[in-house]
Image (cartoon, rainbow, N blue to C red; front, side):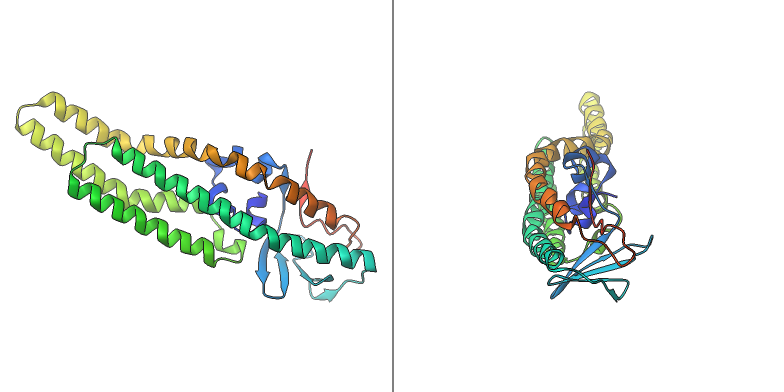
Amino acid sequence: MSLARTLLLLGVVLAAPSLRAQSLDATCHASSSYDVTLQPDSLLFDRPSPAPLRVELRQGALRADGVAVPLNAEQQDRLAVFERELRALAPRVRAVARRGLELAVQALHEEAATLPLGADTRAELDRRVASQAERFGQRIDASHSTHDWQGDALDQYASQVAADVLPLVANDLGQQALDAAMGGDLQAAARLRDEAAGLAGGLRPRLEQRLQALRPDIAALCPAIQQLAELQQGVRGADGRPLDLLRITP
């Protein structure tokens, strides 16, 4: 499972399978089996299996499946810093998510600019894209848990936008093609029909290419993630096993 799900909101722009090459697991070699929720006074990590299913960090104290885990002073300090640093990372993750959303919206506008759309269609398209982006941005800002981003959130957003926008564009181009054919310009009609047919298939690859620009932003998170992995070292759960909230692989 990608750390994009564990380090709060990055899954919004990075969890889609088509973007694995630039996700945290690929860029920072980081992964986790837990979801994480930032509660007002604690961090909660949970997973369906194996035990421990719930790990709670609260100002240096550790509970695993509801049982307090004895810690020495150094371990308490490590976990207190871990919690502080993870909370500090959350705004940076949100910023990357927001950046990904901005890039996606910009790509959609640039795609539309290449099409011979009518003025009314272009205005309605801009309104719909802006409305979708506003709703998704609000979802980013309001979320405090990776549970909010189950199911490849970027794929969901892309599907929502496509369902909202593509029929609008296709109808406009289709009507123009029909008008051209009725006017005797069969070449123009064929070109417009081809543009309408190719729009859905070509949009996603071009969107993915635009999101490659996120790679430096993701890489900039790697040192902080590495620090989190180091802070958990030496801390063991009630069963004596390493805490292992996240993993860094060579």
